[in-house]
Image 1 (spheres, rainbow, N blue to C red):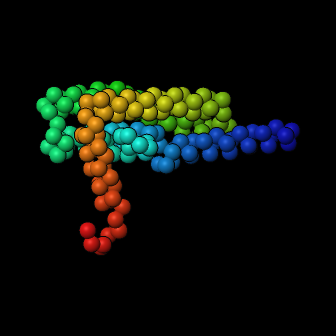
Image 2: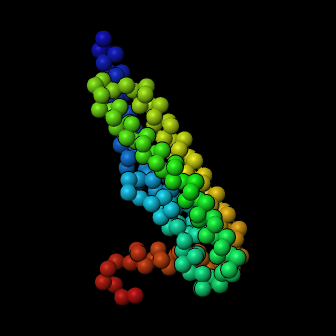
Length: 172
């Protein structure tokens, strides 16, 4: 009987830890799908190439003059961004609903660990799709830009990142 209690208690602790990790801002999906976040505004810190958590396509569009983007490039980037946002919006809603279900299941006594585990796995599938959608959008955006424009965009992103990292009160 004590072994069963330990197993149930251990499973509950594991499930709670998993849910806490899922809800943690550091463990948020690569698309930044935490509560109150815009999916295109945050993301994972991919290494190399189009790196950074900022919305790179939006940055490119905001700096179209410095990047010397043609009208076709601007139109293509706007189309990619719009497509990404339309693909991601229902996934974000699905993920938020899933998290609410997990929260509700955890409030039951005793918690149904099988259902909680299933919902956690469902959430990870959605997170995986969100990450893929972001990678696809970034790759499509990269294909629109020349290598020189990509390099200029990397420089812009680096300078933005350095500005945010600079301690307040330090000379520029």
